[in-house]
Image (cartoon, rainbow, N blue to C red; front, side, top):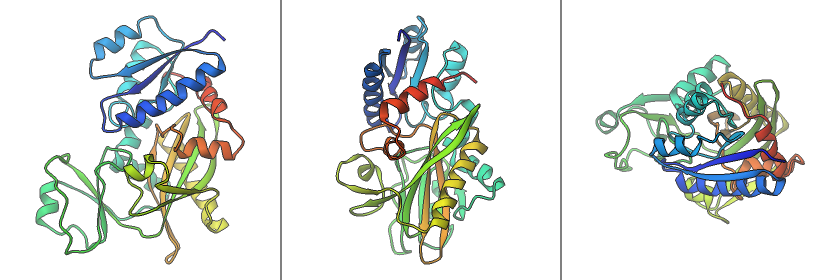
Amino acid sequence: MNKRIAVLMGGISAERNVSLSSGKQCANALREIGYVVDEIDVTADIGALVSTLENKPDVAFNALHGRYGEDGCIQGLLNLLKIPYTHSGVLASALAMNKYAARNVFAAQNIGMAEAVIISPNQLKTAEVMPPPYVIKPINEGSSIGVNIIHNSSETLPDLKNQPNKLLVERYIPGRELTVAVMGGALEEIKPLAVTELCPNQGFYNYEAKYTEGKTEHLIPAPISTKIYELAMDWAAKAHKALGCRGVSRSDLRYDDDKEQLVLLEVNTQPGMTLLSTVPEQAAFKGIPFKDLVNWLVGTAQCD
């Protein structure tokens, strides 16, 4: 197998360390398969990246997470360079990364979501946007970075000075944290893999709970009713298709047992590929080894 694969990893987002871990796992698997692999630590120096990619690889394996790697920016550059790349293209990436834009797409598909508003940090400090409990989150970050839960009106708001100009304030849905991986898109059949329930040892499923071994228990298949399990799978597949995703995506949901209310929170077009990530775990649950998963992603690589 003589194909040369450039694994793009690192980046300049707040998820840099996770991306380096994802990239390393994918690069190792690709080498085991027999590909010639170049690991490229992407920085803000786009000239250096373009220079590195001048001897065009056969495929760019996008292992970047967060802004600039997951929001359509790197995808646009690879389109210009005519280098086929894994995962979603410009439009799907940009839509999914902007949580408010994605909500409009999901609403058109009659997918359930929590009540939400877009406000500025100043508005949040000076007016009650909705009665607590609610969640404050950046519009375009991943890995739960910048997410804060306000449980009651006596709680102090988080420091907002380093927050973006616009924030998403979303009704907090108590209950279970669920996630669904979806494979396919473009000319491939779209297939949701499984539903996993994520049970952090304490607090909510934040950055530390996601990427620290032993902090979160993964229950696969999720111990929920068949009705809710199938609905979560259906919504994840619909969201993947509606956004125009390809390759693999991961949908995150919440389920309130008491009200039997399921809501979709967001879709990640560059889900984690670390040893603790749920996408490789669900693939393995469905009989797809990690090497087969990354090999399949290489096979789906394309430009827009």
